[in-house]
Length: 447
Image 1 (cartoon, rainbow, N blue to C red):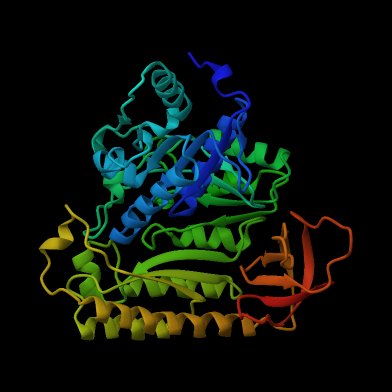
Image 2: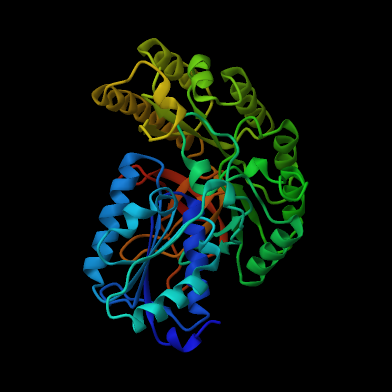
């Protein structure tokens, strides 16, 4: 039984680490608490509740999580501190021993955040020397699905359509942190999208851990979900946040190319352009299949923005195999590379692979690919200078110009916004100009 009086008039501070899915879930947690009378604390205001949603994709991520938890405890010394997310699931004991942490929730328990928070908070009020409450289960017992369709303080909505992963790539801990692949029904997701439209949403980003695997729980298909969402009135734009190349079917690409609202924008994890390394990683495709997907996207949607994940320095990646990756990426018509170094994770099969890349060499390889990424992104942006494109404008950050993204994911900075007009969450046509001063966006004029 929830004691709503416990929450009335309280304030909360939130911190999210990691992926877009985590940001979506944190926004949902904030909305759940808001409905009980909890408001978000101001910038320099002491909070009654602190919630940290963690990531654990690398050792660096774990270290940053610990730093953020301790910082939140220092900044809000009297707050009730809740830690959830992947790091909380994988290392609950470690998190629970950080001074100031009151409640640790694993991946199965975060769906019942309010229940656990209510119970633990009441227990703390009765106990003069309260212990940290820690609730987690094993990977195979992670079966709940926590719905999420939120925008928080952002313009775009993030719709969680799937959670967990069955792939078990040799370098990855996500299946252990998130559990096996599971999803809600298409009907429930369409209903959430309709509510987002009713709340004024114009764009929805489809998120999940392995969204192309949608349907394992309900026997449905991801392409059927895409078709159903495309029919929701009021939503002008959808973006597919990230989809595995083996699950990015030709049928899906063809549908998006002629759809009403799916944007010419894909994010496709590659990880390596070497077939030998892909086999070591236990990835489910080869470089030829990946190249085919990119070629088909560009054939049917020539203006499409394609982002690519690349991991460098994994075990077994000898110098000549990295060169294969570099040359393969240079040959592809993609728009941006998300480059990150391999991180050793306890319990993963990758630790049994011989040949370890030194940190200095990992950094060099990262630098090489980031330089290539900049070249590709600038070339893509240059191609559209002088053209008109539709842009969804976002609320301006104080002291900065209004920004937004074109349909094909070019970031723009508006030069001539009308005075006294709120342009947040409006779609306008702009004329794309030169790069701004820091080369992060194209300057644009509203047409």
